[in-house]
Image 1 (cartoon, rainbow, N blue to C red):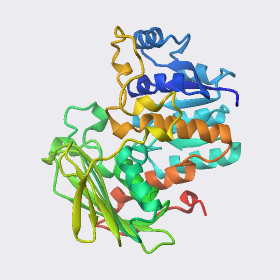
Image 2: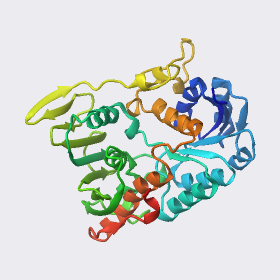
Image 3: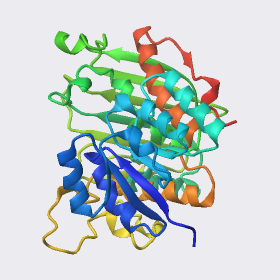
Length: 370
């Protein structure tokens, strides 16, 4: 068995969700946690029994015992913290998006090439049970030829922290871009995006983005496929939805329109509502329970971070396992740095296209694996 990898979790809001998964993974160890708020740092450290605690990220990176960092901080910090970690000799897992500019994505890709270290963007949708169901159907040949892909991510973000206010919809698009590229294991070659509608004037001020909805067509590289993704954040009436549709010559999958209702598989013209199965069987038994519920048996453990699996389609343990397995097997995870850059840059350039009336914009070559 390989030596357990020492992982440090950076950011303990959403990040705390991953602590017990790493603790139970047979080839990983939560070695340290990092949070600027010392009260929150100690609360989480005490709850999970973690001794190494840092309130200064730069100090954490000096610790030679840390093999990898898992970054779960606000989106503006992702690129800088990823680059610092790579330059300090640490592997990186980072929540979405990879960065907020194309240039930052380029720098991260170049740093992984220079150092030989691993970077993985932890995109939840491509490890959700819904995506894994479609992936299994596609890879078995049951769908026939893949013909078209569509995804959407719609939510209302009024009242979220200040940096979200007025954010261009496509600047946080990985949850819908990720699955349309991941299913065929393709890369985006170019995009054309249109903005539609208008958000409140007070929301426009911060980023100069007026659109209520942005919809983007993506041409897949070296393929006859294209995909369409739709994103909205403000002033649009819609139940929260992360959705993914895949159309094949023999079978097609359409995500449910209403949360908690069944999705549909079409065989020719015959529709069938289906219950999406869980995919815990793909995981080591120690972390398999995290796809649906917590593995902490003690009734007095009421800390919120002990409650696992309800969100993100049971993806959290799959993400952890892919990252740890890739490091232990000395292979690229999916998505690796270039694939993460391709997914992220689609959104960044899609907004640029929308601001230019739908102008076609090519993805930079550093985002292509071949």
